[in-house]
Length: 239
Image (cartoon, rainbow, N blue to C red):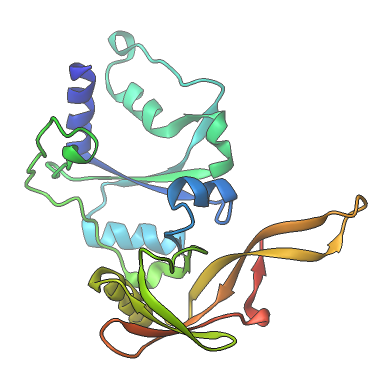
């Protein structure tokens, strides 16, 4: 309803939510949030929280999500507005419990809100404050590219140089700027997700299939050209 939209729109102007997870390589997490085409960022959490406070002010809280059988309904006439908001921000139904989610709530007085992304009939709110919150890039421990990150939407062409080296031309500057950032700031902590088959079988003769990450090196050759090297068995982590 309009009144529900109005209520949440006022909250979005004041609060921003950063959703994190303890479950870094769950199949459904990759499927729901990136379709294996995106990437996963791993933070050093204590450092991230302190960095956010230092660079953006102390209006920040971090907490785990509480998973309940059903979404809780809180009477605003009896408890006011603050408690229902806290309950809404901190609970999910148990269907989502595999995410093991934590949230960081941050606040600014009047943030811009891009309503048109989800509700095209409503104009964007042009707030005085940006929704960007700065943090020290040293808080990033690693970045894992999805197993399908390099695909027809990101690459113009690719040529295999050797068994574990491929030269690629990316589609546009958005992709190249992202890869350049990885090369500049975390060159030794870039990985790609994959799937491995356990060579051993269980009692029924079935081989286990699981998620894995593998260290990779990315070298810039030209404006949109890179050499990617992976397939190092010693760097393979299994999940």
